[in-house]
Length: 252
Image (cartoon, rainbow, N blue to C red; front, side):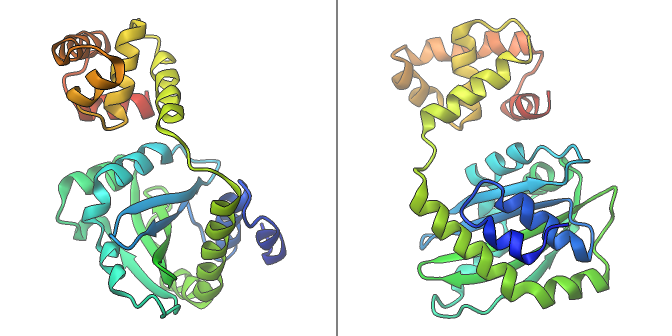
């Protein structure tokens, strides 16, 4: 288990979220953790995330799906109404069954088998931060005692989440689109489905959220060619829809 001193020493480093997961796990099982930052326009960014090593939860899929689309359906988005000067930590619980958006529930809860979420929410300057703690189906929902333990430590957890993000933003540049696309190309190539280099380029950009017109401009080809390569890639992969491509890319 990670102590508070180790957690503080990891502020601003890549190990912070895994340390945070271990720290909160000392009072109860937490299977996945993520820190969400909402800006003044209520746009969301997953700043850090980590999964308990023994579990197979593809946090990258959840992260991409959430940032690209589903943050709009997150009830925590309304926390933007918190005063920027109000730094109190607020605890909210979400059970997936209460969500009305079926796609959000499927991609961000059912697909990774997450059944419960506790959110520690606080405002800092122009941002609102949500530290989300998840339980998967093998662990079951949080107990009342576990919820009480998280609530008791909420002020410390909120302050550390904010401080880490401030330090990390000062010390590193944001990840560029080119780097992300290159990573997606590698993921798709690892499937060993025989995609051609052009089909890999097209499929990676689809997963990155780009439409046919944007892909055509990015690669210097006609939109009709993008559609053709997409159709060929889907045929090789044995899929028929964009959602299937997302799942295949991240879950194999």
